[in-house]
Image (cartoon, rainbow, N blue to C red):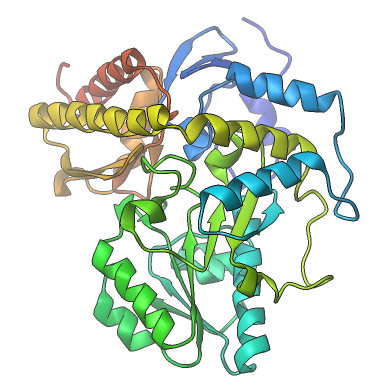
Length: 405
């Protein structure tokens, strides 16, 4: 089949910072995707934990279509009804009292990191500016967010980077205690490290972070860009742990595929962002907020959240059954429908091989570093699609290890 737009065009017209798959998706429905040649894929990637309700969910299409006929953009010189409705929903259903909207998780985190320093400056002076983050963390691709993120590979070639940032071992209370001081303005934690290997935080670590922040007049920031909006089995993962942050960032699943991000915080902390201190031209866009509000209305129900837990167990059981036959994983870990298979030493560094083999068997999967195969499907993926996708993944595993599925 001849196409006017092909994968080769990417190499001709796009900046080469991505290495996309060789196929081009053209249509999606639920947890199935079709490419230009009509091949059908099962989607276990979810646009990197974004497509919370799958592709082209009818309720989201209707919400977007309705808003598209009303108002597209007004900028932050005006407010708009969808943004206010979304903010009201978020404040009524979380710890937060104030919301700032952005277009992405990186921008939500950028706002959070600026806010913690501004709050500390307002209340304690300029010396209280250090941010404590975790090694192997990921918070976005702006210069500030990659600097707070604990992966040096993302800052290589971009020096000098912002200073006043310290990194500790994830899940190490002793490491955290050694790093935090009265100069610390904030501790930043992902409840589950996504890009860092789908590694959940321990309850004790998060509880210690909360206590240490309180003792040192520092703010606790949870980056829930990847874990938020139902992916953990609760609306936000902090609810799973029973540890409440001062600031929470949300994106990815929040828009179900439409670009939107949010920073949630308390009234007291929000006061440090007075008029003119921070902004985003597109933040709070009516289209994005109308879609996100509908996503939350659907996801934040007992049926969907309980479904996430049940589907997670089905996934884990299926992956463990595959592993019992082929012995490729040390463990299957994660939370809710953010799961990772950690490769054994025999397959260390080969996560991409499993992802590419899955693609050949018409399954969309992810990696989290070189040693973890990651899965972040729709929160409402049908059980039949889970089973079919696992069947295809088993065939991919068999290909990599050189056995017959």
